[in-house]
Image (cartoon, rainbow, N blue to C red; front, side):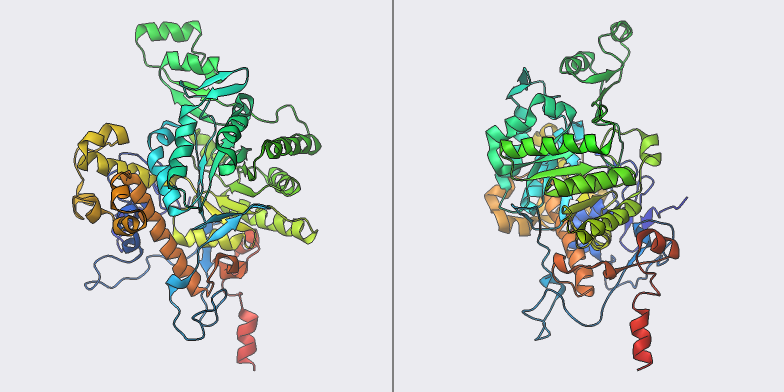
Length: 544
């Protein structure tokens, strides 16, 4: 089994637990005191791009080999002349990497413009999403990137009022939408996800009636973590019984004799709330197609300008169905999530053994998109998810799916700034500790070495203050400042890779900008091996 290094001496980072390819720990804790690369980047921003202790060190890459079949086995090309997408300065020779424009857009008739080519994973009915939403939403809106409200938010809300399939009141969903819109400045979007229960509960009708076309809808077919629908764990038997009354499936049954007896004895119980599996009554592609197209037509009729689809790490048949139906239904964005991460409640064995890994799935998505395009069928704009946390991998994902891929999905990586910022805020402003769900009683040395004020701790503080003003930033959760700092670092790193490839807009990124580091990856992705790419052009120069 391929193992990733737990520490990076050049950056001064270390993983508390077992690291994944993305550099995150397999178990990312909200109370973590540091310091993986993403964690550090939330504090130090662009400083974390470079080796530490400048002026007293020299540094060299620890590992430039490419093994296994994964995103790390792709290498990024660089070119020593030319410019694509940049015209104002190239003739004068004054071009800097900061001249790279990272704006992107997606959609059919109604384009959604994003400041950066990032989008969050879906943040739904997990407790993590609810607790840190102020940071997630405000940070995403300020950064100009889309955020997705995941499934089941209305269904699990005790304060929501639902009668005869009609929502009369949904305070938690309102809070989530309104938080994002408070800081929305024309870049990005907020999407509300629908699963079986959400559709039955009338979430789409409620949102369009209250918020109009300010919100987009995302239909959900699955995710990279699991293929059995959304889950959460509940320990309160009364709340579990409430969820059952809302129509959810609870395992075990909280209204059963065994559960009641256990509750009387004082033993803590764990009830898993499960969503229903979609399409279990449909037997073939034609039936799925008819049902899906009807669902999209209904959403358009309700007034939604933008409808997207999220699919998971299913095999080639599922991928092809999603891509063909997304094209036929004029879906605005197809999100393709590779195995196997999750944001809170996914069976561990399933995460490790179910579904198609990200690199192979995304390579096939590109292949299938080219088949549709060759037939004159315009594929839906795509976003790729499944283990993205670094600028290098973001570039690789965009290049692998070019020109069809417009965004990269980051789930767990975009949650870390919410955790970290809230922990710091809870220490520096003790009165806010419970409100922001801070986990620390004092600043750990990994943070205090930079100072004891947000101005000193977050390198992105002053640039954000310049954007929104001193009064506004004082009201902002620290988690949002941390997200602003992280996205700025990711953006700078992406600009550097793009500048090295002489690509000055997202639209100019090409598949030939990445190569396979080994022959197995070349076979799986259709990319050229690193020593074969441009070899014919090189030999032509030598033989000229």
